[in-house]
Image (cartoon, rainbow, N blue to C red; front, side, top):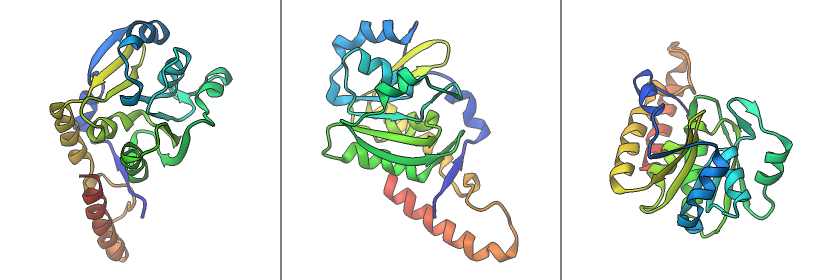
Amino acid sequence: MELFFDLPVELRPRLKKPYGALYPGDHPSVVDQIKAHLDESFVIAVGDVTTYNLFKAGVRPRLCLIDQYTKRTAVSKAISAVTSRTDYVNIYVKNPAGMLSSEMVLAIKEALASDEKHICICVDGEEDLATLPVIALADVGSLVLYGQPDEGLVCVKVTEDKKEEMNGMLKIIFTEKNTKSIKTDDPVCKELRTTLSAELKEFLADVF
């Protein structure tokens, strides 16, 4: 059973704030400023525009996540031509807008544990919330880059404290009350709810 987790209202204000250092300005100029300090082996890019600008600057992220959209609008053909990689291992997942799917989270975990040097997770839906599990699951020392809408580029240096912070938020999100696999309390769904509970426990064991 695929699990889809809605974002709790109490977390929404926190998720609007940058998780790391915010570099104001347009992405190309910011990437040019920081690329000398980037070790490709530890760079993770979340978002089409961020991924595009890294590639254009000659930086090949270890892992990137794209959905062919930016600000809910389809990216240009120029961006898509650069971010659609034949030299990367491509993993395809579904993740509805404003939610986290178990499929995407587990794909992130598997990608980060893989021996493959370059992986791209292609999301059918939206990858905006992927930054949370990416930081939680990445190795300490990794650099996670993503765009802060209309502000600039955020660079997160993954530390144990940062991982703990993200894991804390994920544990709030990954609960039965936030799942959307079952939307009714009708008695006929009792067996399905039991299955959901078991699936959720298995998923949490896989992630944490």
